[in-house]
Structures are given as C-alpha cells and as structure tokens.
Length: 186
Image (cartoon, rainbow, N blue to C red):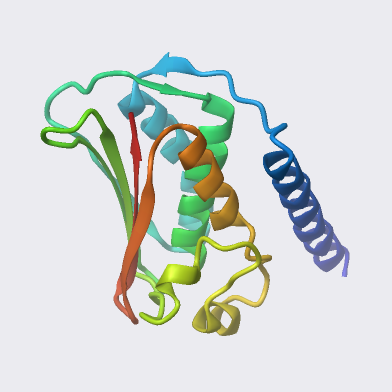
C-alpha cells in the first residue's frame, strides 16, 4: 500500500512538473542558457543515468557511437537532459520484454546539424496518429492500452525544447516493431 501511494505521488509530481514547464514554455519563461557541449559525452552520461531503469525493465540500451569526433553543439544542458530522458523513458516504457533501445549521434552531410536518433523495439505508433504525437495531451490509442499512466505532455515539451535549440524533430514507426525518434541540433 505504501509503495502504491509512493508511486502515485511520484506520477502526480511528474504531471505537475510537466504542466508547470508547459506554462513556462507558452509564456516564454522557460529560460535557456546555451553552452558548447560534446554531444557524445553528454549522451553517454544520460545513458549511464537511465541504465538502472532499463535493467529493471529488462531492456538493453546501446550507444551507436560515431567513429569520428563530432563538433560541439550549443545546448542548454538542463533542458536537453530533460529532452533525452523523456525520449529514453518512453523507449523503455513502451518497449517489449527483452527489447532494445539504440541511441545514435551523427553529423548530417552537407548540413550544419548533428542528428540524434533513439530507436526502440516497442509497440510502435499507429500510422494515422504519428503526426499527432507532439501535440499537447496526445497519447496514441495503443499506448494508453499498453501503459495506462502518462499525461501526453512529454513529447510536447520535447518538441518545444528542440525548436528552441534551432532544431527539428520527427518520428518513424512500424506497429509492433518499434519507433525511432530523430532530432537535430545546430
């Protein structure tokens, strides 16, 4: 009973934090301070933080490291940590037993952007809903059946963080085969 109450309290706190962040985003008060960052080291540190959650869920997480050094990116580390964590949390929560998550980072050819990809082997997103997933409060129908908790705010916040960094984001998915989220950073 105490564990259920603790979990419910943590879920409520996450929803409240998300609503506060959305309010700040929409009022232009989210606040960004950008600093040059090695995206490979940054990604590696985030993955180290998420590993205990992945292990508990029996999900293997891999980092497809670039072979060549990448240029630094200008990011707000606090907001980008929130962004990465939410993508990875979703990739773990909506995955299948003994599934995988593969994170990749690469420089785009002929463009001044670094592209990050987060690919899972999870439940996927229906084709007719994939264009709605970055909207406020939206959750795909199969996601609500698979995982009842969730507010539909995380990807909306992620979208706003990426856009504030001058990047873009999109997703590709195949039902029952997985989803890949992509985003770019200048």
